[in-house]
Length: 417
Image (cartoon, rainbow, N blue to C red):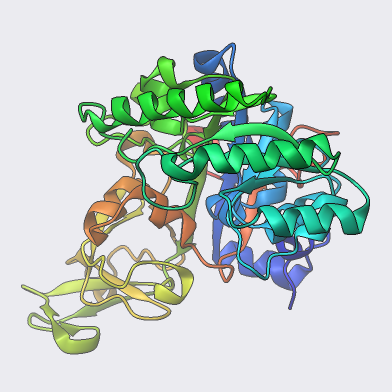
């Protein structure tokens, strides 16, 4: 069954889909998205804000997040692939939109036709020009220079040649050099000197471009951590991904301390609650055994839903208590040890109770950072990997903004069920 998120129609969910969303869902707070964009825009001003919505908006849903971000003051949108940009255009989003990661098979002609800005590291230039000729429309190009990250972007040794060639095509009316940009490698570690080195290299690249006659609309270098900690990197535009979703890019500094609100809550319901004896093995490999008589809770989410298989010990919150996952995480499920509830003797059962894997951290609840520590990764990966099998539900829309249907959050900040 095609989900509403896949089609962009967030009002057509069937009763079956709605019931499935009650079983398990990723609840996306569009109010938090708007709050984060406004907060970042205040920090970045007078620079504009590009909301990065690649990878389906880090798993949050590209179309509704893009609309929420634009309504809160973002001026640009950014994605990795042209295909992602075309999907946003197909949804009726007309804001300035940059796609920067290409292959020889990327559809540059479709990008030019749709008015999508194209990042160019050098090798793409001839293909972009060919697409402009085919469409009889000048391409909008952002030239990228590699200032030290070592991924895409022209090296400083080839930069002068790329700029000169691009300007020749601009003089022929085949393209417009709209932007110049680069990407930072270690801005999330503010004490490291490489950011200063990259900034200096970017300024050299800008000077070379200026000498060649480039007059770009936007120069952009800063990502989320640089936006929050390095105003000298802001230039005309900042590209913000993680911060839009309310997550901190800094080790040891929380979202709240940065004035951000996490937007995603992943939750389900306890699907079984049963008493077991001491020494009961749990899940594949029987790597965990209960230390005494205990009650096990079954959580119907697993690595097919995007929960990292390696993240044993990750927290699940049930009725106000955080319980670590015990035993191996399986494809569809995992287990928490609730302690001796003695359900079989009339003790309290949590069958059907809400189980939250991570959310905004209110009242000591688990966060994406908690799961990142359990998995040995970062919070970017935790939210981005939540799979399409987990339905997205949206709360706190703004009527008339084209955002999905609204649900109001429950008291205490927990999403409505």
